[in-house]
Length: 291
Image (cartoon, rainbow, N blue to C red; front, top):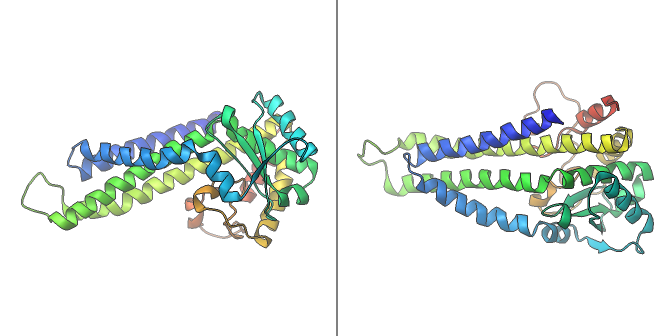
């Protein structure tokens, strides 16, 4: 737990340092670019965070259920929430054949956990329990908030870079010795958003590992979640799921991804841009845990 928490903290600090550095280079040391970028990011991402539950449920076409609608599944979530020390979240089901699940909401008191019909039909009770324990760990760790902070800073960096690039295009380099070099502005404008995106994706992967660990700890074993991930990895490609790319990172398995976690030689650059860790690595870690 400490390792993943420290990694997230370092990555968030890295994003903070990156935005200061970018603003300093592109804004000529002025704080104006930082403020404009932060305001834009807060408006864009803040709304998504505040209405995260509505957006996620709408994207998945999910319906919040009552206990009478699905007694076994609802009761399972209630038991896991109690064992986790969490308030009872709202429970939803998405009418998708792809086995998948997600958690959303601003915090434990506003949380929603959702499973697809494909997940409930394809997995055993123990495997579904492993998946829902994982989702409740996202709620407990306030990962929606952490992800929103990372997204806000990354969006601010991209906004600052775009403003600087357009300003350079329309105003030219000029003769002002204090003005940043146009070539430097172009390079930073292109590379800074890329760096911010890489850090944001790394934060997302770190939170997935932490939710896996928390679920295994709650259940006393990582085996049910490991078996669930094995099945989901295979079945997800057979049943495409249409969701907003902005919502895809909330799922336990990327619903938009194809079978790209195959064993390969060399460096898989694509994994650096993935919101989810490689499934085989998640399974390996889960099965290596002992309690």
